Amino acid sequence: MQRRVVITGMGAITPVGIDVESSWSNIVQGIHGINKITAFDSTKSKVKVAAEVTDLDESIHFTGKQKKRLDRYAKLGIIAAREAYKDSMLDTKPIIDSNRIGITIGTGVGGMNTILEEHSNYLNGGSNYISPLLVPKFIPNILSGNLAIEFGINGMVNTVITACAASSNAIGDAYRSIKHGYLDVVMAGGSESCINPVMLGGFANLNAVTESDNIDRASIPFDKERNGFVMGEGAGILILEDLEHAQNRGAKIYAEIVGYGTTCDAYHLTAPDKKGIQIKRAMENSLNDAGISHQDIDYINAHGTSTPYNDLIETNAIKDLFKDKAKLIPISSTKSMVGHLLGAAGALEAICCIKTINDNIIHPTVGYTVSDENCNLDYVIDGHREKNVKYAMSNSFGFGGHNTVLIFKEFK
Amino acid sequence: MILNELKEIIKDVIDINMDEIELKNMLYDDLDLDSLDMSQIIIALENKYSIEIDDEIFLDFETVEDIVKHIEQAI
Image (cartoon, rainbow over the protein chains, first blue to last red):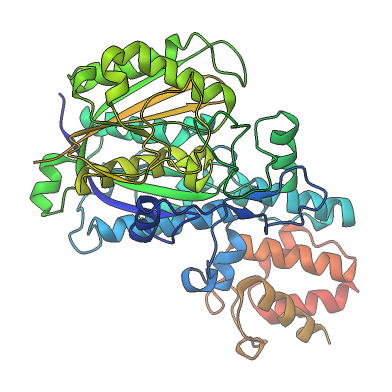
């Protein structure tokens, strides 16, 4: 049994906006959310800039007791989920059977900030000062658990941990659950918030994150001088739904998800395989799943992290698969504006693909000034572009060699 | 005074005004505490008064007064 799967709601909270509309508006205009780090004192840190969620008044969203029980990663996820749920009208045009709704959330590290806070309490006062809330705050599945309680969801509630591909895998797995009849609706996406000195120090010593202190030349995907990503934080949630179920409920339909390809490099813990074979295969698998050819793709939302290796290898894999068409497809990197949301990146980029399809506007890649002869495709560097987009492809690749590709299609 | 100190702790855990907490309040029914709230309250009391409160004892607490009486006896 194979059913069609559509998107009926979206929610997001990002470094460039507190919801989908404000985030998308800034992304289209090429406004980035990268600034000097405020989450901690970065004087002694090698890393000076990050893309933080700003202007968040938690009291609007949570009671005092709720605030205490939730790590920031869970708070961001819940805010995005509430927007998506309302947007899908599941609150006013509800599902009768709560057993047929599920949740799949992707995250890289879950409540790492809580672990650091409680470890500090332990070092200062001993084990009696570790909060009983430690475990129910930090474990990476707890956002899913919180969402299930808030929305009364009794179906499959999962968390997917594949680093920077996590929320793309979450969306893909949700799509398969509905396509093959296990569930009718799935709240799918991701959340991440780990802008702290330990995480950034680790990434810096791995030479993965940029040490630039120029906020306009820090996240510069495909640029010759790129030297690492900018850490971001945020959340993105989609409501995926069986088409017939959505139509019966009178829900509005943003787009259809038609392709999911996921492979593993099985090569190295952190570096992508230069041959790019499994990246290419993930793209091919997603095209086969969608029943289309590479010729049909109108736009690629790249993984585009601004690291020397990823941007080159991704470019080569696109050239290898798309051949002559590679130079004709517009490719842009959302990470040039919001930094790298790690486990939540795929979800926000899926939202960008869907907005692209709905608005027929492709967002730019910003920060690019120095061309790289080896990265010479069309990265939409001169501002946003109007184009009729029927099929959009979204790439996400994570530490551990996870390569995940999603394809979205215009719904008519 | 122990009642005031307990009220401070409860206020901290569940974000409620201190004057909404009375000696006769039922912990689970009136104050709507759950097991996670109780765990936090107990550990805060143990740290504040340098005592240990056994599981069997705190599971029997029904009212704010039960906790106050136990602390008075323990210290």
